[in-house]
Amino acid sequence: MDDKQDIAGFDDDMKEIFDSYLVEAKEILDHLSQDLLVLEKKPTDTNLLNNIFRGVHTLKGTSSFLGFNQMTELAHTSEDLLNKLRKGDFIADDKIIDVLIEAHSAASALLQRIESRNLQPIELNGIIQKLQGAMQQQPDIVQVENVIQAKKEEASQVSEIFDSMHQRTADSTIRVDIGRLDDLMNLVGELVLARNRLSQATQSLIEKHEQMEISKHIADVSSQIDFVTTELQMAVMKTRMVPIEKVFNGLPLVARDLMRTTGKDVDLQIYGKETELDKSIVEELNDPLVHMVRNAIDHGIESPEERTKQGKPSQGIVVVNAERDGNYILITMEDDGRGMDAEQIKQRAIEKGLVSEAQTQEMSTSDIFNLTFIPGFSTKREITNVSGRGVGMDVVKTNIAKLKGIVEIASEFGKGTIITLKVPLTLAIIQGLLMKVVDEIFAVPLSAVLEIIRVRPDEIYTIQGREVIRVRDVILPLARMSDIIGNSKAAKQSPESYVVVVGWAEKRIGLLVDSLQGQKEVVIKTLGNYLGDVPGIAGSTILGDGSVILVIDVGQFIELFARHFGKVA
Image (cartoon, rainbow, N blue to C red):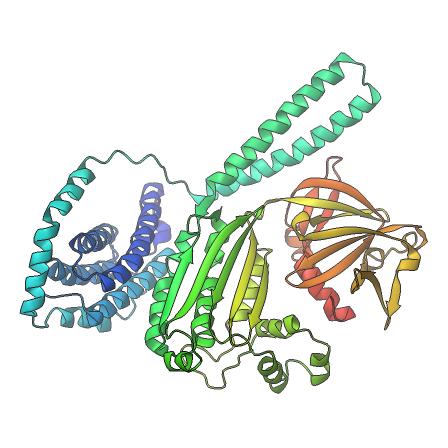
């Protein structure tokens, strides 16, 4: 098969093989990214070299079978170099590690092209020549003797490892196309909606005919279906869950490359790799995390000389951690660098015309930090291949917003910065709070609800034309939902209303509604091609009585409110 052939023409059997190839190749490259960094610290580790060699050898074989000639050539040349390292011809020094990592990057780029069905050749002559050149260097006799001695000491251990590999039991897992899991999740969503309708119908039946035997029987059946549906929903969600390790494993290579480029020394510590979340969400986290690592090292961590002058250890620290928080995953990235200078950020934003000086006077420190999310913003005045183009933190915010998540920044100048990402475990089914406004019902994600307050008309004030209430000495802006939907005939006459306080990042706003309709499990459906994306609306859902209601996207809603009505709390 020629590299220019269109893979889309594969029949079903070949498509299954191709899909398996993609999964296996990604796993191999993920493991190689970690193993090469370990090899840099343990260049005489025979077992590690064998593992790396086997991974590259497998990649070469499967690529050759499918006719991916460039991947085959790259893997074959890398394999030759690794074989010399295994035989002890020379040691894997920094230069050789650099070449192997560059080959790994080229293989990753090739795999991305293969996955996107783009089989146009890429330039590989440079990396092939570097791999071949690395094999031409003269072996260091002392180094070779050290390797031979290390091999003798590890021979028995390696033998035991190979023996146990032959005795390994069959793999107990199967690979399932993600499309099938998507279909299964959609069906479970429909089942949840039907369960909700059945529960409501059952409740109405019991209220009218409580004493009838059939009512009790239907209630029991409804309760059982409710239980089974919940269990099935959790089971299907678990099948889609994958460890965040897949994304985290790529960060050390990014950090290593930046340390080489900037001359900085950074200890990247990663925790919580085993934390699981939906596969579709994991894939969207790669770009934000890469940009966060780049910002932490390039902008946050000082040079070793600067850190020494400040009384800090010459080596900086960047800590990445993931943990479960209810129906959300919290990912934090903390560094002990220079922190964020609010005054510098403010002045730079004014220079670029992103905000006016008058606007910055009303901004809190958090508001100023959030200016870094604006596309085109950068504190660097010179553009380099690392930063300065202003395409860093806006990528973080955009990608996390697509996942219905939030980003928070906390920083102390001279001490360091903490960036927190909060993303949902899944985007399909959420817990929602139902709110009634005149004759309309809306749902808001319960995770975004901070508190609920009952207010009287005389507790609502107007400041500069905007309605607000006082909550524990804090002025909270109000969004009167009846005005927003264009129907205020009854809301302002209500003796008491409810304020649902919602938050997104550090921003707070109160949604003024007529009444609350309780908490429900909400299956979010898109609005369809006709309506498309509506700002401030995450989608729609169906209630137990069959009525369709809108689900509010809290992040977009707050941004729209701030844009049209001014600053929020």
